[in-house]
Amino acid sequence: MRYTKMHGIGNDYLFVFGEVPANAAQLAVKYSNRQSGIGSDGMIYIGSSEIADFSMRIFNADGSEAKMCGNGIRCVAKFVREKGYTDKDELTVETLSGVKRLLIDGGGVTVDMGKAEISDDLMLDLGFECTPVSVGNPHAVIFTDDVALILLRDIGPKIECNKAFPGRVNVEFVSVVGDNELRMRVWERGSGETLACGTGACASAAAAVSKGLCRKGEPIKVHLDGGDLEITVKNDFTCLMRGPAEFVSEGEIE
Image (cartoon, rainbow, N blue to C red):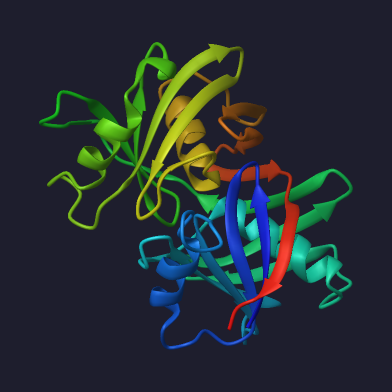
């Protein structure tokens, strides 16, 4: 099985073009391990689709399957374009959270992430107030004065597995650092602390707009540990995400 390692601002995955094997979850656990495997935040399989140009399935580093990955889908677009599987600059990709539309340009990939669904703020028994947001997958967005002060590896798993979220949740700590500008750190469900999360950036931007902290219809710059994303939240809370995708290495798995 041939793999290509790619990353979107540090959020890295092993990409495989072809059918999803029955033991995909076990393979993700084995090869995502950064000590004894290749090392990644998970594995993404790219395949055919009856309703879109391509399909993608995402398996986190712990073997759980994710519905959507914003950084991963940008890499999918770059993979199929540069590997010659398509000559289109506008693509559709089938995911477990629906069909996503993408535009490849010279400086990156823009993804229509769909509409963010924001719920009422929730006070957790851990003492944090969060804004639950769904962007095809669940997020708990927590605004704080300085994300650098958050002990993410301690508190992240406690919120991820909190009883308020029976299916577990992605956790974002967010600070407003400028005009339409956010700083975000993320604890991803099934992967732990990562350098970036595209859906998390969308969820954070949408939550910020809903609270009047950022403006609709204009690019919101989100600074993550691995780099920056631009998120535009439309009037109906549809989110457009723009960012880079990069190749890292290739190899074969026996």
